[in-house]
Image (cartoon, rainbow, N blue to C red; front, side, top):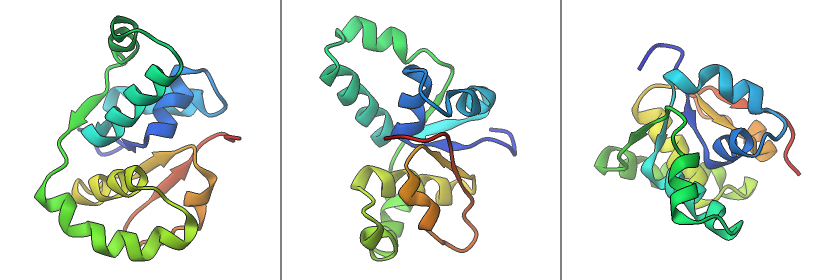
Length: 132
């Protein structure tokens, strides 16, 4: 990954796939970015909820995004992240994205406005567009 690579949250990936506000920001970094396998599983679940077939979902995910495993290094960060984000309403998937970004020393990118309130030393968070 390059120095400008971001770790994308499911909401940022969905913004791109659904051409929502902020999609252009994701498009600019997609070639050098990655996502946790957990966050991609979230995306797959949402696309299935939309009624997409497995084949269509697989085609939709061919966006040039690297998939990173979620393992022991990320798990070690989860207690700290839960304490630091629970009051802001972040989900398990959100914390998985943050843990992956911290482990890989990369900025996190999301469409979730609640993340703007998160202050974790050494972690840059980019909030794209405006999700409703």
